[in-house]
Length: 89
Image (cartoon, rainbow, N blue to C red):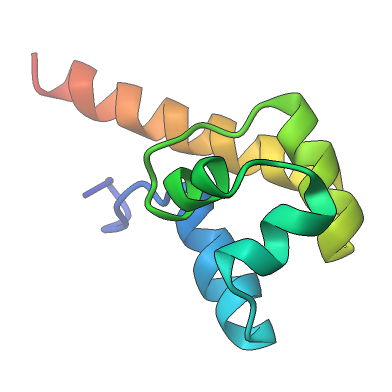
């Protein structure tokens, strides 16, 4: 937990809960138009993959967002995880 009581939220969780589930999308539904391997999208949704700039652009195009939205989610997640590691020292 963070000082504000929130845990770091992985961009894959946001992708799944805020986009895929409400739109009824499957991993394959997102993998095909973005030209990303299904296995990579699956790893992202399972919070096992970081979002890179290329993936951020693909997600932005197909989900009507911006690449900055996805990159900001990733950098915020990374920073909060690092803060937890340093707080535990």
